[in-house]
Amino acid sequence: MQVALVRFKVLFNKHKNNVECNLVDLTNINYAQRERLAFIDFCLQFFGQISRADLVNHFKTGLASCSRDLTFYRELAPDNLNLEHATKQYYRTKEFIPVFKHNPEATLNSLCRGFGDGFSNGITPSNVCIDATRLIHPDSNVIASIMRAINNRQAISCDYVSLSSGETKRTIIPHSLANNGQRWHVRAFDKKNKEFRDFVCTRLQNVTEIERPIATIQGREFDKQWNNINKIILMPHPSIKHVKAIELDYAMVGGKIELNVREALLGYLMRQWNVDCSLESTLVGEQHQLRLDNINELQGIDSLSIAPGYNI
Image (cartoon, rainbow, N blue to C red; front, side, top):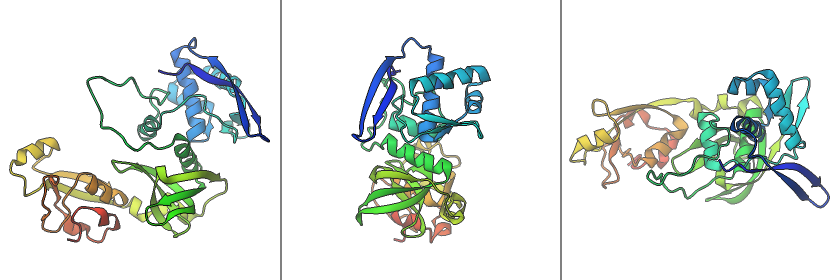
């Protein structure tokens, strides 16, 4: 783990907007405690709060040990958190500066699968097992602001740059993050258009959290496209000569795959895997190895507008 130096004390000069940092070496602290400190840091940055109970539940340690970890973290970064005795929760301050550097991709994987090794930095890359090259990398600070807004059911203000409208000021109420296979999107209620939409995370700038309650109809439970689950059936494309190769690739059972997919994400999935969504599976090209067998049952779904061959 490349966690050797952390900020020990941060002095803020609010008038000059300067930050001074004194660094301390944490290599002499045992791995288990560094992991717990990183977990505290992670929760404060991405959820905005942490409690002793969170540490107990995650690490299965005693209350006394968790209290010592929180006390030590406060010594490392006293301006990062405040304790509210009424709730027995530590809350992130506006002066928060992360003690640990959390890798954006590993952070999103941690948020998807649960906080793993505590550092969200990933492991040393393998020389013999190479993942796909990623061209798009979300900003950790943007993801953190989105996650805190989701966790606290709050809106965010931002500058959003779209392909169609360019840069505009937006107020959105996020409720979920999703990867479409190429980039991360935030699913949110858009106050400008008064509907739920997808926003590309890398196109959000100058994100500011709005600390006031949201309207009930702006919450995730009212996002019909997100909550509606569709059953899809994928089969080898009829143009494939050796069908068994495709069946092995996708671990098909009985020559097909059956999946349950959120309506809002259905078009992304079809586009990612170049699934032929035309009514008669008429698309031509080696990139189309799959066809959507039950396309007739899925007509009228908005997200399918980006799917290969849809409505052709």
